[in-house]
Length: 231
Image 1 (cartoon, helix red, strand yellow):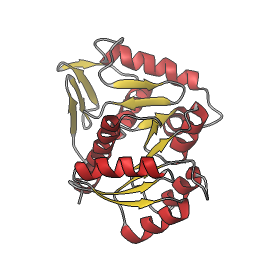
Image 2 (cartoon, one colour):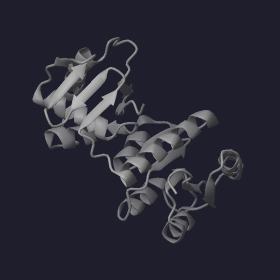
Image 3 (cartoon, one colour):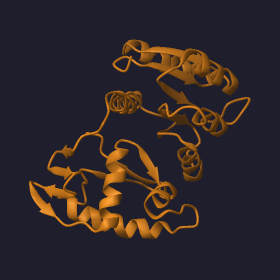
Image 4 (cartoon, helix red, strand yellow):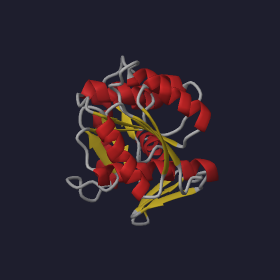
């Protein structure tokens, strides 16, 4: 199932719906289509898809509400594909529980890549991700020893930096908003100051990135938050 996941498209624009459907079919995916939020929720409940592609501007209920309703029962990957390009809209969708956000107009190759990221997340969840050592390129994290190594040489991270790194790795490939990071690391959300995150993130990057102008691991989603490389 996770090698060829079932995808639910919730999109009211018939042209875009057909465009996405054709690309999914070409790439061997099984999919269902809904033109309204209510129809999408019904298909979600009845067909149990593995990934959802969701437009926010639906004719009956707002896409943010669809995310919230689905999140009451499921942690299924939700990829928002929407013309709402404002940062506040992206933040609202991600804070509601969306895993990723792609603005229209979009490149189909990018959408397919984001779907593959969601597939890898599904595989990690079904097979378990209880590894004792995380390794990506020249970065190694030994969870048992609480060691972080760059090119097999141990580096020192402060407790906050280490907690930030573990949070990013646990959600690799997913955009994490400032509010989410503040809540998970510091215990508070909207009342916190995103400048605090930037200070610690800059320090963490100095320690693990070889070229800070071309990051390998931690990517900034301007005005929204951060994303850790999936591969």
